[in-house]
Picture 1 (cartoon, one colour):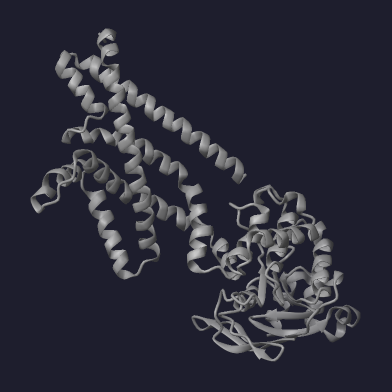
Picture 2 (cartoon, rainbow over the protein chains, first blue to last red):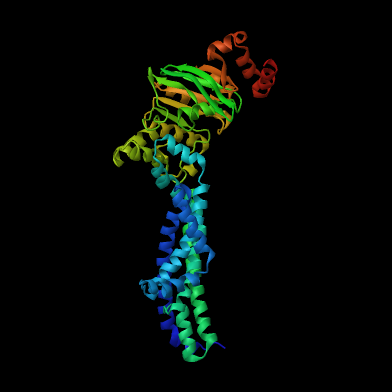
Length: 218
Length: 249
């Protein structure tokens, strides 16, 4: 049975862990969005060299487990003289992995922008960069918003991987509570409920924004 | 005067525009009439730098135009068949976007121009609304206002009635007449013959990328015998014309 007294005593630590998980998610998401947008532009408009670089990046980061990327960044990089703190290793690894997926989402969104929109902008004399900035990207963002929302929710859960390199995020707090109390059910039930609350809140927030965007569109 | 001389375009050995020549005076309307796929829209797209010509020249007031630069110099503008308005922007922003970023007007100046155009086209109360909230006819008015915002000399309209209720043909004709009255050179591509009766224009019937017959609209209706192809197209519609003309060829 779940021990609510243990849960109550551990709530402070769990919430501290949840805050750190959210911090990892937000920072990784920013890296994912910025990196993903750049990669998608390289894939669509870059020259041959840019295209090869972006394609290789996406193949590597989508084709290997995030856990391996995280561990490599934290444990392997010090061998070549690059030491990155655990928290930032988690943020960078999760963010770079996310960028590979986000690039494909944004690429699909850009390709979904009607040819007529681009032609209209061309006939008004807008340059290629202006068309990308004022016409293509804003419309692509609307199209890909639901998929980016899903990516955001996935990142909340992916942040739990940071526990393997000792970042005291929510899952890590759960294992600390379990090792202290020997009560795995209570510790992980608490962790699961907090994850559920975080993902549900994110989902609700995204739904509200999406509805607002939809209203403006229609 | 706009002079199109011997314009040609081929795609994979198929002639889309075949040695086409055409002259239009300022303040006049020229209608490219023909069935779908005869090259009407391609010609308008070539003038607006969306397609490149294989050969031929386009002159405006005896100066040869570099079609690759006409959009930058705002010499030619086009109102697309489906309007192609920017759905993510407001009505006003659809006009101010190019004014601010291409014509380099400042924001208040752009908004003032947009306000004047929207007022002229009866959309001033819609300025802050999104394009999706407009009716088809309002969208067309906005598309025309957007094109005119950059003050082009030549205004092209591609199938201006096709996306609208047939009852609005008179309104479209009035709008086109007003454009000509303001001094624009107006080039309309259409297969809608009902438009011809409602505005004085030069009709150029196209078939397989070439102009096969030209006439003044009033003249063509008064002396149908002199313009058999146009008369056949107007009387029998596209299907009948294509059938007859294929036999004649």
